[in-house]
Length: 155
Image (tube, rainbow, N blue to C red; front, side, top):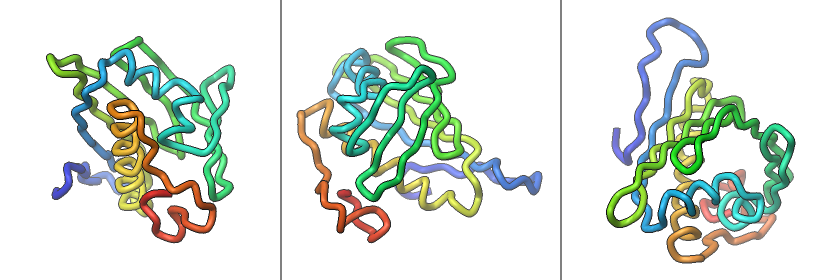
């Protein structure tokens, strides 16, 4: 599929068997990238407007008022992180390379009717992540009138 995404064919008729896969090369080392995925302070620089730690993971507060609890299922610092978020299981793998990190994000159990939006949504998280961990730049507009719901990619 164009753009690096991948859709597992649903042959069983189940509503939740679609998988999303994205890969990203980062200049930052795996420790820095892992910290960004697990730090509420970092979340607020590339993913959401505000984040807070929970005993089981973290809570994301988005500019459009959406609030999502993400439950960490497993973590092996600095190479692997698995969490449940927006109804999907998200697996992050961080592989060190000479010049930084190769990140692989796999989202499983994505509802078929939400696949396209979730597919684009993860890209809308990964590119701001790269800008933040590699360059210290927050790409988002932070304008509550210009959100994902209004089709702004730079929410």
